[in-house]
Image (cartoon, rainbow, N blue to C red; front, side):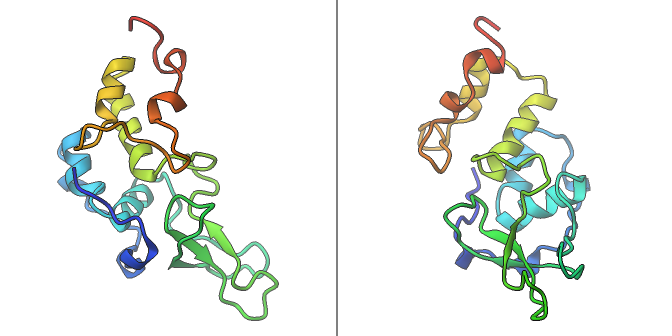
Amino acid sequence: MCAAAANAEEVDVTEIGGTFDLSVMKRYNMYFLTKYVQCSVPAQINFCMEVGLSPKKRICTYCKRDLKLVAENRKDHATPVVYQCYNRGCKKCNKYVSIRDGTVFEGSHLSVAMVLRLIILYINNITSYEQIRNECVDEQNTELSNENGERLVDVFPRSAVGGAGT
């Protein structure tokens, strides 16, 4: 599995432009997702922007100017990239806006990469609890967890995933 950068120091926001070459994704399966999308945070964000899961730009709600993407580690954000207003005349200058706000990722404590894995499983009609659990295990054969230390299989109860025996 390709490891994506998790720290702001490792993320180059200049690589985030909202474009992703979808032609490399021959099929929407785990192989292509891991190879081309999950390998870096910019690739994950560009993919989400290209397919419409995340907006390509944000506007400041106060001054109506474009917000800039910046790499920033914040303990209340799972993704090390946020939008920030740089208009010094704005009340909200230097305030952060999560890239997750107003998207399918809002309110989730799972990484963008993990949510994309779950979406791929869903569109490939994989709903068995055991199959999802197997797909949510990393290379060291440990169950993946969110930033709160909760195991993914504990976050999604068996009844929410497909019930017993499915």
